[in-house]
Length: 153
Image (tube, rainbow, N blue to C red; front, side, top):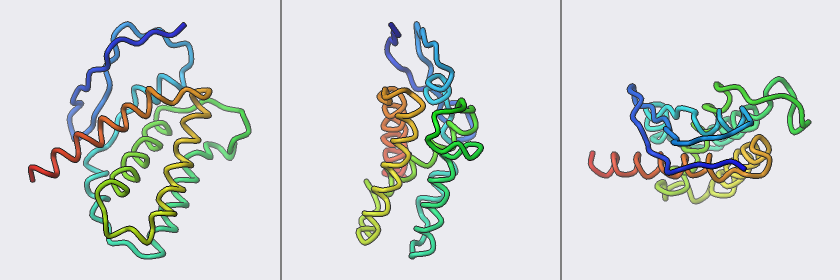
């Protein structure tokens, strides 16, 4: 049985957020990569101000779908998640979550944004063997942190 004590968010410099987990006993490297991945919050904040149109949405969808392809093994059941790929998936999920939470002007793209979120969550679920909660908790914590920072700015 895997055991995880309280998660403490730790600044990792350069706008990145990492997760420190006490008493972690995880056997799957994919779960570890997702749990410990660094989210590039500087990149997320930069992209959060993106001016949207149909081309931007299509490019976002292509990037989201490509993030999970890892060596063209899309949902094939093969291959391990790399640390780089885990970080990319979480970067995009944080960005999409923030678009959905804070960009009211994107209502016409909501369906596409929800599709992107669903794809990213499906990727996380696949890599965590249906136990995405620890990774999605990291995403939620990063989103709350960025929202607080933006509210103060």
